[in-house]
Length: 154
Image (tube, rainbow, N blue to C red):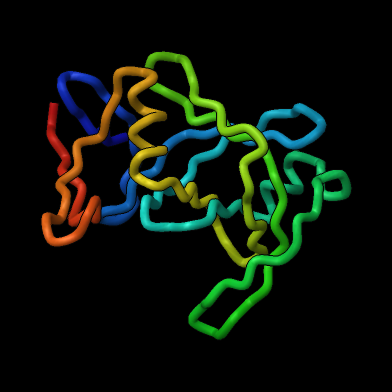
């Protein structure tokens, strides 16, 4: 397991490829059952996506509210996938979590792992609650654009 460090605080991630950072989350639907999984953090994504397999694990496929379809551009063309709302806990290294309540998600049938789409302010807010901030380098040519993540070894 790798970790990102900032000001002595550890933020756990797992790198499967260079530049891909995963965090542990828990997801629940209307039944209140929580399922723990890992999710890819994508501060450039405008949607949060969960897998159809995760929905099956939750056992809530027939009780999740249907909010319509999200049109996604893929390598094979446009695909319409259903959207719903779930609760997501972002687990911190201090044993606490940040709750994203009634968070809109897209259920993607052909996906292996959840993608947690947070803008940079939401991501910082979640981490500041636990004193854990991921260091980032910002592109000075655009307001708030992320150029790359800076990993600091502790």
